[in-house]
Image (cartoon, rainbow, N blue to C red; front, side, top):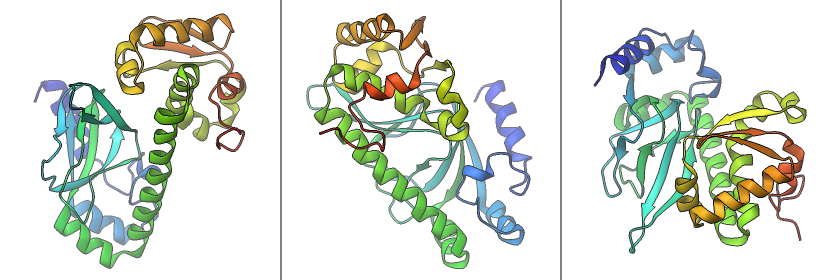
Length: 252
């Protein structure tokens, strides 16, 4: 572990669950102070560098964790060697399953990542003791199921323009949810992926992704800035290009 990672780990380790600035989106968001002390007694933090593997498919993962910061890609390696992303985890998302150690994907840190984790056995005991923790876990799993269905739709039923627009909309959605007023403003987005990686994840060629970025730029919807940065100039127009209706469903 490098010095920067050690400093980051030390800072988080000194933060109590009660005063944690990220608690509002974690598994313990609804816990009472005495319950938070129980959670804090079994938690640990781990730091991963960009590109570092958190877990390989078929590994046995002995912990469950909330993403505190960064982006984790869940991927599958296809028979022909292609990489297919099955999910993109962001702060507040859950990694691992409390009742099963089996991993059915590769978990890769796309950026610098901090995890707040719990070993499975003591965590499952806390689930029995703290109802608020179990309810929050159910909420997280329900949201992830919805996200999985959305990703299936993105990969299987959309054309190239809709795929790229959807990818960008999904990438910026957490910011919109935190501050809905951003819908009417230009938003800078630093993506954890290159265009080649986006193409691999969306089953598109690099050339196709580049053409779609250019087309969205020509329509004044986005403004690319370098290989990983883009400004969303018109978020409502971007949504209109995803093929989804206003409620997030598929347009007939």
